[in-house]
Amino acid sequence: MSAVNETLIRDVVAEVLGKLGGTATTTTKPSPAPSAPAPKSDSCGCNVKKSSAAPALRGKFGVFATAEEACAAAQESFLQLKEKGIAARRKIEEIVKALAEKNAEAWGKIEFDETKIGRLDHKIAKLQIIKLVPGVDWLRPDARSGDHGITLEEYTPFGVVGAVTPSTHSIPTLSGNIVNICAAGNSVVFNAHPSAARCAAIAIRAYNEAIYRETGIENIACIIEKPSLDSFNALCKNENTRLLLVTGGPMVVKAAMQTGKRAICAGPGNPPVFVDDTCCATRAAKAIISGAAFDNNLLCIGEKQVFVLDQVADKLMQRLSENGAVKLNSAQVENLTKAAFTITPGQGGGCAQAHTNKDFIGKDPSVLAQAAGVNIPFGTQLLFGETDAKHPFVEEEQMMPMLPIVRVKSVEEGIERSLESEHNYKHTAIIHSHDVESITAMARAMDTTLFVKNGPSTAGLGLGGEGYLSFSVATPTGEGITNPRTFTRVRRCVMVDNLRIY
Image 1 (cartoon, one colour):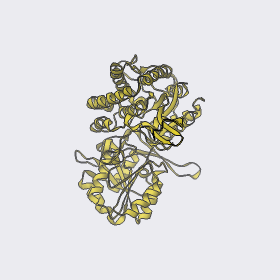
Image 2 (cartoon, helix red, strand yellow; image 1 turned 60 degrees about the vertical axis):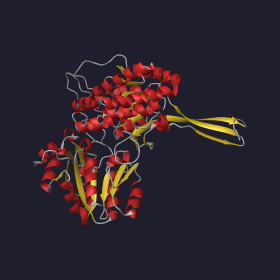
Image 3 (cartoon, helix red, strand yellow; image 1 turned 120 degrees about the horizontal axis):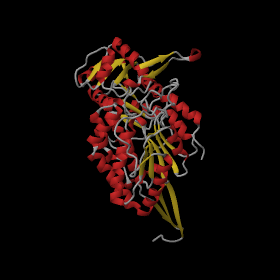
Image 4 (cartoon, rainbow, N blue to C red; image 1 turned 90 degrees about the horizontal axis):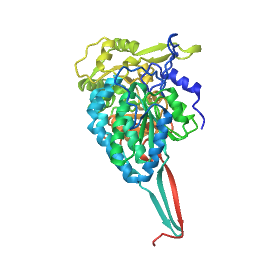
């Protein structure tokens, strides 16, 4: 297989340098200091920071210094899992789910302390719900019989899966990925985001220790201790890596898709919300706050901008204020915008570009409020304020607990604005309406993987709605909400003229 295009990878560095990962940005790559070598970059392009924290975890139980070592160990564990069969897959699924719930508080705090983004209570909650991720039971074979015999189709593994995880949900993403990938019979090697690599390694080691104790398989889920651009490249090129799973921004997704290997890519989202005059304003407000405030809006499915019919806009904003959100006036919105974004003029007369300030990503509303110049009550969940449809808070996947509210004059305009702001990611969209025709029109226009009606965005992943959980929603490559079947090949076995019992 071909190596990752180095120019493209350098573009990845440029795209997300200065961000914690997951959203698109463009910056100028700084030159390294003359006295020090240039820092290596992670798979999403962010610089690896030297850590003065606890000593290295490297050793057995899944933590390795290089991609080559990790992939070799993962290949061996894949072969062991193949021999031990479905029972071992099920045991791995049970172990990961049980440990994620048991260690949710401790691991949530470790991840929060390392990344310093999001909310601690929600870091914990994301680990407690790993039990909702589907496993072995999703892989039921399909059989059919007829006059000429019987055919059996089964979901079978690829082998070693190379996975990239973000800093926004490090342990939850790798935990859910392990359940899906190993339930399908594969092993996995993770190249975690450097800003969340240590917490990921702690979880990997604990999972492997328990899995080895119960099954005798030692390295079913491996991780590269110090992830970098080089380790990402090596992971992609390694002959044992049969499939890639990338959860990140558009440039790392593009890089993975150009490796020559099959890639399942969970890219960015910028989910719009449309509110019409038939909805229950109170229910809509509570749902919007619940989804947008979760983990300080780090979720890629989280509500990022609201378009509301003019005749109900004031009512909706009043209900938002009554349920834990604080409204910013125009001057305060402007203050926050100046702090949260760097605006650069477009080249050649083009449109100006907004670059998100990483210091505000996933921060508490109080931090944003201070920048806006307003005091807010303790416990405020979310900030909001009126903007126009082209405002940076509308256009960018900003991942902050701040929602822009845009008035529209008709359902048609609301859908059109929603479509424009989503940037054709085809990720997630939300509507609050009791008009079936409006709901249907928006669903067809948006064509998103997740489309939530009259609920928070999180309902799209089974949290308050029907469905199942996944932390990797593969929109660029079309697999959608990943599950064990996503990581399988379909194989067919045919017996001609026999085995049919009637």
